Length: 610
Image (cartoon, rainbow, N blue to C red; front, top):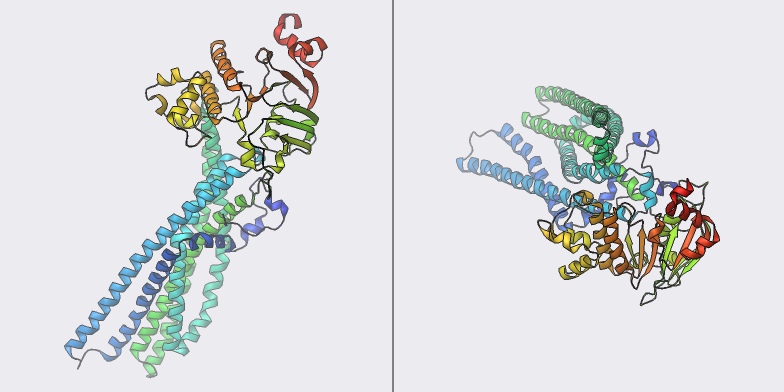
């Protein structure tokens, strides 16, 4: 993806808030962000060349018309052979045909380029977003990010197609008209040249406010979209707390702010257009009056004045159109700038330039060596503090401890969502930050506490992360997870399309699909994050049976608050305030009388604890 403006410093790269750096930046008129479109346009050189040729042809045909008008005014048709008249007007029709065909070709080519470019940009932006580390999404609103992916790319499409082609066409007409004006009458051209600064300078100055207002309108729309997205994603909570009216009122205010910003932008563009048209019209009338004096004095023919006026009108119309296009380009520049900000955010988690190969076949060995870690948003608190342990291949390890003790952080470092602040995390003897990121994560299968299901078929959800899996393999994985029976009872079986998040299924059914996904992945290391915490007794029994089958032959790390689910673990690691405070089996830890014994007392003998 090349839609990136030059980086000023490292801070810009890690700008998580995606906000304006300053008002001054928004006020500057710079087309530099749009230069990022060049690589996308140059991907389709044939269509780009066709569009440019069509632009040249249509501009050339337009510029040929005043020449014919001059001849018709000065020479008239008296004494001319009828055949010549037929040829003359036939040629004009030919010019019209060229103009029509070239204009149609231009319209098709530039719109094709616009649609193709915006599709490519959206694909590249989305790919970039999927590669950003979780740290980015902890501080950025997903709704605003989506607004940039959709609304801003649409604005860029306007620039990549209509605006740019209009700008080029009118520039050609302006330049061609200006040249022909000089050829026709140098004296009148100098008069026009004197008038140009009085036309252009107000347009450019006014264009600055259009661009700033365009950026503001895009930002307010993004905020409104973000709020709507967040509210609808939690619609059950919203309705359960009877918060519909309050939410609707807040969104209405956000929409009104967006409307006010768009209205201010529309006023600015309307004013820009009015000023440009008025200044151009006054200039043309003035030049026409000046030329009329020469016609009256006999120093210029009427046809020459008519030719000059037509070229002046073409040039003036081009300037007027450019003023309108400038407003569209200003909007697109604001959108491209916002996309550029997004694309400048670089993930701190990347594969090294020369990654170390993980051993084959995989062993499933894990080692934490003096690992400490601090979350970027909580620099004053260590999530892990000098943690060391080793997990042998095929071993089942339980991670327990109070909330916030550092258990989930262990998983985050293993999957390399973050890098350890100090120490080393190793998989099969290779430090995770020295391995290829995809190769590293392919060694894990994860069953999270909150099952992530997508609005797709059940088969596609099970095969998520195992592209190319056959239907038989999907069914076998579902059977291993004790999910096949309830899936086959659904109206379309494995082809049943789930709602967003799998809301049409029970918690136990969702968890069993997540387990089937882990089975199908066939990874050597299994990470279970509170996989049965939200289930009823019957569902927990089924899920636990499924988990027992999945864990067989794999290295398994289990996060659990319900100690009854980890009694049979090979070892239990007890964390407290980011430190590994105890280690052993269930029985040995009970005898120690430490943190684990206290947790067990609370859970297994709650009455005594009270």
